[in-house]
Length: 622
Ligand SMILES: Cc1cc2nc3c(=O)[nH]c(=O)nc-3n(C[C@H](O)[C@H](O)[C@H](O)COP(=O)(O)OP(=O)(O)OC[C@H]3O[C@@H](n4cnc5c(N)ncnc54)[C@H](O)[C@@H]3O)c2cc1C
Image (cartoon, rainbow, N blue to C red; front, side, top):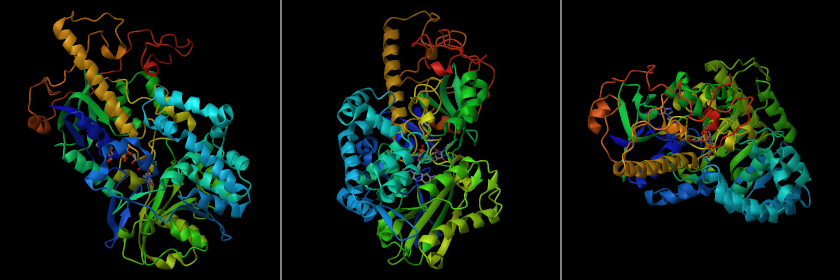
């Protein structure tokens, strides 16, 4: 039997597996698709001479992530490269805001929009210099980020304290207006805020736009040489050197809960994989709770919270193989890896408002990637491997454009929407469409079919909005990877700190499992020396007791335990064992009657006991 099962081989699942393997755990990684990587994959599907990143492409968060740094993926052959410029935001009149890795170059460009804006940019960079280390520490460690949080709070005092905190909470439109006179700096902040689903008027979009801009300023927007898939390949190779293979084509359909604890999984092929210590799920929170655990096993309040879970916007993407570079009117755009296409702040607001009204935008804000400009290995010299994506509503109530798109996303609608995006590019680069040798359209259902986590094309495992961050991510609670089911951890971007490729949710989940494993080991040793009666007192910690007050049997570190099938088996047998689990039976494996031992808080009574954990899972609304 394996120590842990990891469901899903996206970047977070692979990071989780690597962290567990480094600690000496045996791990089974089960991936639904025929290849690992989740939304970090590349192929030659558009044209055989062109490498295309199918989903994500630029990795500032990966470059800043201490989690990935610790894995030393350069030793696995991973190499990074940069475009000459990080981000460009051209305007129809030919002006262009540019984010360069040299802050003085960025500042000089912004001064051309309005004298003094360069100095304003450098001021924002100085704030970043003071906060960077602790801010990233806060972002990339499990919640609550005690040490880095305390240091960050102390440093905040030195750079403006309350006033700075206010600035970070501002909508990006307001922050940009306070800091800059001209359009250049404003567009850099706002365009970067819209990398997440944050409208220019959303709370905290200012802070997010600033963070993304400063990450780009400091680390650039690097890409793996050879394609996004090289990052995945490095993570898989690292696992392989520790004797762990990813089993592809194995979709998990159920998390097996026995005695109130996650003890394994069932796959679509009927196989059962038992886990001695933990199950880590690199799947979205709704999929985990609704499909794999089952709503009937969840406490009512969690079910209610799930109903309020908010997805980030859907995504519509087009990949191109181009015969030549994109003929930008603004020459600076030609050397940028990422190009933002919107006529200005008002156009961004208009785009976000159409999404909020469930309309497919008539002038979609496009994020465009020039991959050969960034990495010459992607296509033959003189050509360009490029892509652009925009966002669309999940439930379409109308088309703000003239084509009466319904969101059915059949072939006709996909072609119309792809044409719409191309027309936007053409406005900034006349002649663009003549350079298209081949294109591939990735509509929301296509994205979801290629990676079940991309629900309706949502790319971040849930909204980045403030109301679903930190202690609110993915649901109001602890902001931690633990779930109401002991032994089960949420390891995907649905968990804090959220989307993008940095590996923190995976590493956080793995560390939580390791910590619990250590605690269990200690408890087991203590128990071996001083055996206790079988029944725990009812005041014992809630997750450690089953609905009827029975103690949960603690899986020891390396002790053989019966697999969920109820008969002893080797690893090999476990893999191929016929499924003999009773599915969601109303026995002690069900969590529907699960209650913490301490009285739960209700809607009408304030939270009284800190020992009730997790408090959000406790009690019902009734
Ligand atoms: C179009 C697009 C562009 C993006 N651009 C960027 C970018 O430029 N930079 C950036 O940093 N981020 C970007 N992102 C976001 C980033 O890719 C994600 O935040 C990141 O991949 C999340 O990693 P994950 O491991 O949580 O999930 P995923 O990468 O989605 O991986 C989840 C994996 O779990 C598997 N899985 C799901 N359900 C099951 C199941 N039941 N059984 C077995 N396996 C299962 C899936 O098949 C998948 O392989 C982009 C995403 C998209 C879609």
